[in-house]
Image (cartoon, rainbow, N blue to C red):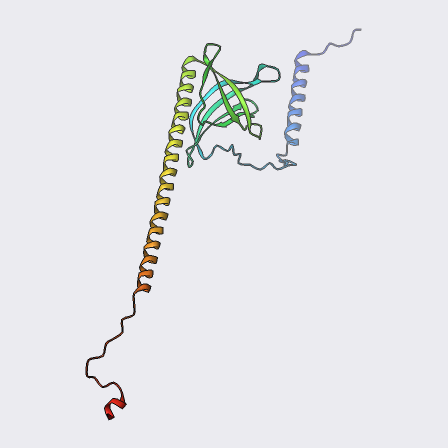
Length: 229
């Protein structure tokens, strides 16, 4: 005689009870305890060195530097170029960081006689010389920057050259102010010298004056001997 067949309804009910028991066991095992991390990470304030500067320009770009040894352009990085003006000194510098690593790929002041030139006739690329400090030491570099659009390239050029021209004006004014101060100091020294000479001459004249002896009135008896006589 063949064995009895299993009731599918009963089997399904047993399976459901088994799953419920497993869920209950899982709930009982979850005690809600929290495990403290092995290392406690503290929040650290990150500074970029740009806290004392105002952003005049901020746009995406690609930067190249000219390799003299290989006589070719090499990519320096893709990221954001900024023109930053210091709040106290009013000096403006160009800073560019790579987008992913934030590594500095350009860092220099905009000073005269800097000027931008078109690169190979492109209206979105500019070339210029600069004394760069991105590697921690001053180095003469030839940079080429490529902006995303003609509009951005024009905006970059106009602001860059405006800053360079204003620095020329500030330098000339500083030189004129220095010359004026030097002339003033020189005139003060000459005036003091003349005053000293005048006082010395006055003292010499007073020393040269003859001593005036007081004359006695006529007939005045000046000694006891004359009285007795």
